[in-house]
Amino acid sequence: MELKTKIHAEDGKQEIFITREFDLPVELLFKAYTEPELFEQWMGSKVVKMENKQHGSYRFETLNAQGEVVFSANGTIHEIVPNQKITRTFQMENTPFPVQLEFLEFEKLTDTTSKITIQSIYKSVDFRDQHLKMPFAQGINWAHNRLQEMFE
Image (cartoon, rainbow, N blue to C red):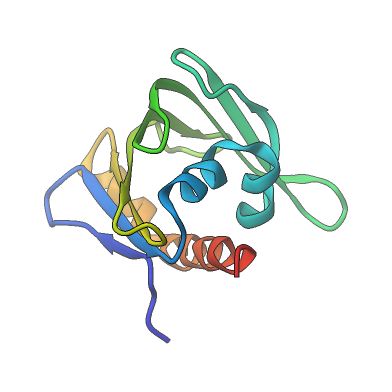
């Protein structure tokens, strides 16, 4: 099955680009990334904190069936422009990965379609390459598919 969310990683660079087009208005796509109730539904993670403002912060956790935290991430929001962009840091807790810098850009294609482009910058090429060896592409595709299905 073709993955609809595309991951582009150039050899020797410390960044990746994640792109996906949705059959959703850009306003709805942006809300899915910024409203805790919606985010939890498609990401499958519990939002512990989400302050969508300049110098705000966020934290979310993924729990197993026993209610134990199996993944958590946090960051600081540096810039947020409704329906256009979010600039933030992203830190996976309890992993060897250092913080990443992320630029999320939301683009209106038509009144009913939109696109997200996420540029993630890693501390080194090695950390980026290690991250790409994880089931990362499948995970983001799964989450983005759920996001699209929520509004069908």
